[in-house]
Image (cartoon, rainbow, N blue to C red; front, side, top):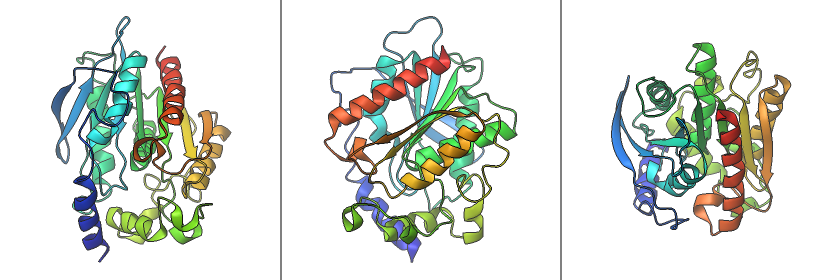
Length: 294
């Protein structure tokens, strides 16, 4: 039943996503290039945003969109990718990945890892040794997973991971994750359960360290992992688990900064009119990216 709901929800939401270029920052005009990248699970589509004012050989930022692993596509992050390319000395590689329930864990995480490996290759237009990964919501989860994979596989080296209001513990039932907004919160428990079940229907698998890095002892052994900027939203049902993971990162010296955005809920930067709040937080991320690749 969860799969049926997930497919219907995805069809409805995906049809409502605005085309690239409309959401925010229309003053930033960047000529992009669409490409296809081969992964172990087949090709994925991606878009390259070149830096607006490059100096030397720029680095690269690999972005994964959100959507509960079930909905969304890379175009929904177009405004963010344009903003980053305009203000940081990086190429932005904005990638799709296979969505659940058609493809479940570990496929999306392994696809994202393969894209990151591709981005790190020396023959690219950028310096793959100055590499950042990041994502919002489910994309943040994938970024945490890829950072752990990179640690365990001795590469590629990641300079910074951006975890923007990510789900990092899908073992804990959504009903036990309160939001001050109650029934008005963006993420309702039933919706979280649909997403979680579509991605990892095997409940035992939800405790995997690549799925729920903030759960239990999963953060043991993360010394040496890429530094992380963790951003949460005050009213988000997922705030507490992201904060727990930030604390575990800090314990091993891998927390660049933890930021809680006040007065907003999950998805504030793509689902609301909070343009100034969004701009302010994007500027924070840009500053961290520039420091990480300097």
